[in-house]
Structures are given as structure tokens and as C-alpha cells.
Length: 206
Ligand SMILES: O=C(O)CCC(=O)C(=O)O
Ligand SMILES: [Fe+2]
Image (cartoon, rainbow, N blue to C red):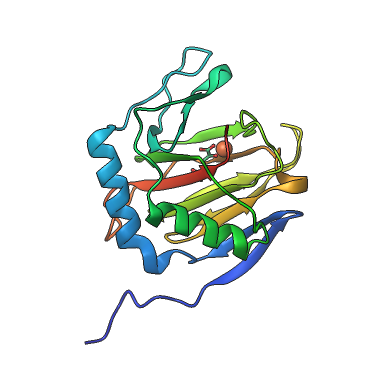
């Protein structure tokens, strides 16, 4: 039968020095990744964290791996209770890192963000990780969202790119401390994830 959701061949789009978008890179892994999200969320339900400024985040979060992210200044905590990074997740993260020319990436943290309609992430830097030589590997599943990617100053001009189901962004080296964020999610229904966008970020945090 004709497959309306036939996978496209992946391609790469440079985003900045040290940063690349691997388009549709995990499209073939989407069912397995979504199963992983649901498995993790069963043990560790999605919650809306509070920022240091006392604001409840619109994005709901869960995760796995030895390092657990705590919102804001607190950074990471080693969490013996959290589920380990499964082979499925590790394999995807490392395959993407290798494709983006970061062959030595060994993540210890997997953060899962769930965006509902209107959820956003304001411009920020990922800088709580101890070793900033390791990249961030960021997987998009479900509804599309506009990703903002700027420079090292909050006021720097931002690139706006649409991230779609199966895309992976990897940033490191000169781009590691670039400000980035997500514009408010538009309403929609995705065949796999329904009314949500999921983002899985892999980091070496500890
Ligand atoms: O949802 C995204 O694509 C970005 C998430 C992000 O920047 C983060 O979790 O630090
Ligand atoms: Fe981030």
C-alpha cells in the first residue's frame, strides 16, 4: 500500500560554526523514541518546574540518566533514583553526535521537554554542564516549532528555523554557549504525538 508517511532521506543544514541541523535524522526511530518517552514518563511523570524567578515553566519535563537537571541556578544533581539512559537513547544520541562531527560524545543526561499549545522556552544558554567541550544533542518529535538560535549575547540577532518531526540539532565548540529558545507552540495534531511536541536533549552534565 502507498505509504503517506514514507521517510524522507535525511540531509544536513549548517546552523552556525559548530552547530548543525540533521534533518529527519531520527525519523526511522520515532516509534522507538516515543515508546522510550512514555516508558520514562510512567516512572517519572512530566512536571512543570519553577524557575529561580518563581515562574512556572510552560514546558513539562521529565528525563533519565545519572544526571538530573534542576531548573535554574541549581544545575545538575546526581540522581541514583532516575532510570538509566537506555541503549536505544544512547545509540541515537551518539549516532547524531558522530554525524555532526562530535565523535567522543558520552551523554549522562537525557532531558525530555513536552510542549503543549502555547508552550515556549525563552532565550537561554545551556551552561550548567561541567564540560563545555561536549555538545548538546537535541531531538525533535511531533508538532513543528520555531527554534531561535542566536549568539553568545542575549541581544545578538537570532536565526529562526522550523524544527520538524525527526530533526536533530547538535551544537558545540564555538556555538556551545549560544542563546537559543523555542517560540510558542502552534496548535495541531501529529500522527504520533497528538497535540504535543517533544524534545529530547542529551548532555554530558557531570
Ligand atoms: O525544545 C527545544 O528544542 C530546545 C530545548 C532546550 O533548549 C533545553 O532544554 O535546554
Ligand atoms: Fe537549551
